Image (tube, rainbow, N blue to C red; front, side, top):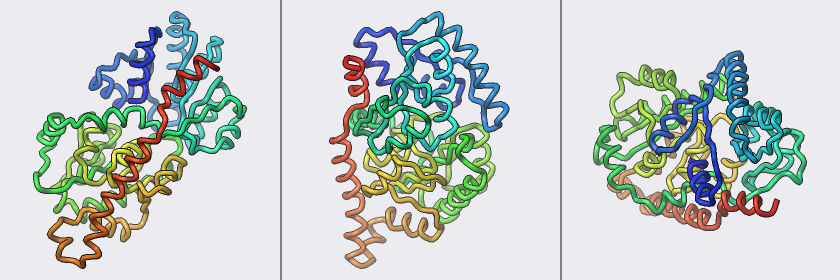
Length: 361
């Protein structure tokens, strides 16, 4: 989504661009959905260390020939180890966008070789210099990366597209919607123990709320889809989404987002949706959103239940409680909207920061 807008803008400025990506389920299918022209080179290595290594080396080999023929003046990536190695080997400048220093394996393989790093201002410089990057090679912007596509999406109401998704997923009218995004289990920075904790929290949500609300699970991989389908096959009120679906449209129809990752939690927060984070790790972008009140991070089952009940209580239920609770519950969504609108309005455009740097490096 970031690079879709990025490429569109740069092509309007008459730049010649080659877009490449891996054979990775969500990226590949989303590119088709958004009609983004991407040349698929190599594949994702999965969660096995040996397969990650062989997939990466094979992709670097394949990219070497293609990039050598294209002969670009500049490589731009989201901290791709293969892009870093090929660009370095061919003597091509490599500019990187990265908001995830917690992904240390990727950072160690890319950051020392980049010519310029662009990142959100909420990430301390020391989190990059520890990987060997000079401080004067870092350009920060006062924005979170999803802002690149969020501002445009906020202007588009998407009523017809949202109605189609509701029909396709057989959303039961009159019931609020909880969207759950499981963690990036195949990322090198996620440990098995932490994954098990997230699964327990998702179990708690389904067991306590599937009879009352529509619960959607947006998994990342086919084996993750199969896992949750099998786990909840006898549960009504829950739908494991089996096809790649526009995440922003799903968020727009959602009443509460529960994320075990990073990007969709930030997207949901910036468009004004209540967000619970059950991610097993800590990172700067999320910490910022927690600090300003757009995300609640919860790892305790009791607190999780209490919070969901508070946010999703129906009007009739709320009216039967004390008036003070009614005011607090209703003002929570208003407060989320107020904060998100204020933050979004103040954020810079990372692409404009990049273009400005190109003109005055």
